[in-house]
Amino acid sequence: MGLVDWDLGINDEIKVNFLATIYLNLILSLALALMAYFSAILLGMVHMTLWGFLFIALMMAVVVGTFLSFLTVLVVLLAHRYGLDPDNVTIPIIATLGDILTIGFLFAVIRMTLFLDLYFNII
Amino acid sequence: MSVRQTTKEIILQSLPVIVGVLVFSIITGNRLEESADLVTKKAPVLLVLLPAFINISGDLADVFSSRLTSELYRGRLDKNFRPLRIYLTDLFSILAVSLSAFIFAALIGNLITGYLFHKPSPWGRLVFVVLLAGLVATTLMSMIATLIVRWSYLKGIDADSVTSPINTTGGDMVGTTLLLFLAQLLLT
Image (cartoon, rainbow over all chains, first blue to last red; front, top):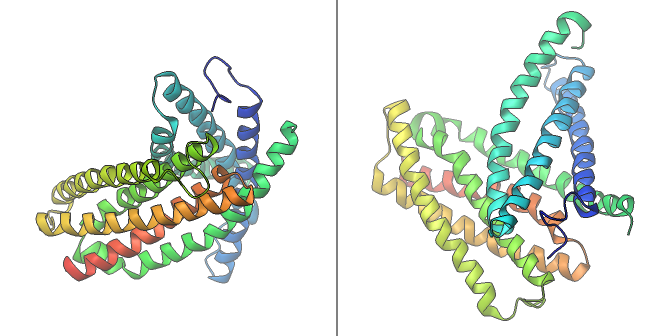
């Protein structure tokens, strides 16, 4: 609809959506960490402190959220530049890449948390 | 509207929907857990196929609602999705894509299952199950997408902020339920 274009660069329209995505990611990740922690308590499966849950969720939100948001903007702009309808291509690409990257990053962040725990006692 | 106000508006519109669909995600996970025996022992092809299957139905519903939203805002469709020719062209295109995508997913999924678990399902029956479940799920999700896009358009809510989470999670739930039900019926 002409609001976002390769030639327009990073304009206010992109900034707004980018910021909203980051905030939503942060809010939901923190909520999910709290839900996971209290569910673990209820089920008697707590092996980590609340700070551990929050740290992992926050890292995921910042790293994956930011990366995927950049990737989405790039895919939309590239699709538009090469004459493809972003409506048709962006969602399948980002949804699939999102699944793969989220699982990959989740294990990486858990490994990193376990490593950091050796020095800083996070979990 | 300033950057701050628009950001706030997007968050306020999206947040309740995302929190709401979390419930449906939990129901889907629970449904899958109940069928653990079917998935892991009776028809291991489902283990390979399910992530791709639910992705396809959710993604296609999402593409469909994105197209509808764009066409509404560009004035090519009115609030009742007329002219109907444009709406039906989009719908049948989505169903045509789903037809080929589900057949492809079934064939590749069974091939991988044969390689990994040495226990592929009967080819014809698997393609039938996946195609039937896929087409029903995509049609159902397209209907839901149509209703959500219309509702959000009439209420002045940005459809882009609410349709994606509903389509993706709805696609997961409808797709998982249908595929497991038909697989239980026809593959075991």
